[in-house]
Amino acid sequence: MRKYLDELLRCIEKGDISGLRDLSNRAIEEALITESRELINLSLLSYALSKILTKAHFKEYWPRIREKLVPALKEEKPYSEILENLLNEITLFDREFGNYAIDIVEKARLKQASRAYALGMSIRRAAEITGCDFHELQDYIGKTKIHERPFSQTRNIRERYKYVKEFFGE
Image (cartoon, rainbow, N blue to C red; front, side):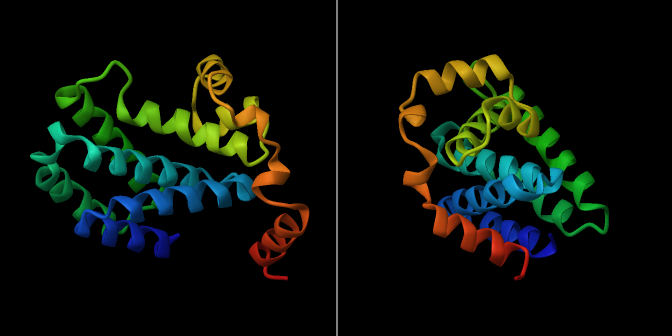
């Protein structure tokens, strides 16, 4: 987990939107297998930060956000505590300065739950592991074409088998 936090730290320091998004996607993919709360929260945090960096009205606040995030990621606390605290910080920041009805962390929950669903997890389980509202996720997925694309088109059985073997070090 430390390597993921170090990567998150590098992306934050550089303001690397694509790096944050890539980290978010890799973390949710790994979380599908492990259902690690830490990986799920890392995925949510990375996604939320990438969204902050893409919003023009947040750009002026990025140095202030970065000043809070960087020291927190270097703390010697349990990873789960660090990630939960940072997600709470982002939620508070978004409530104070955001312009949208759905806050960034809730949007991250919805997007990462839909990604988990697109990768083969059931809607209910995807909602549970990300903390997303089941009915919101169901409504969102119903408005997309995710359900029309079978998992096998995203990753065939051989690729899935190889991924699981590599993940478990076999």
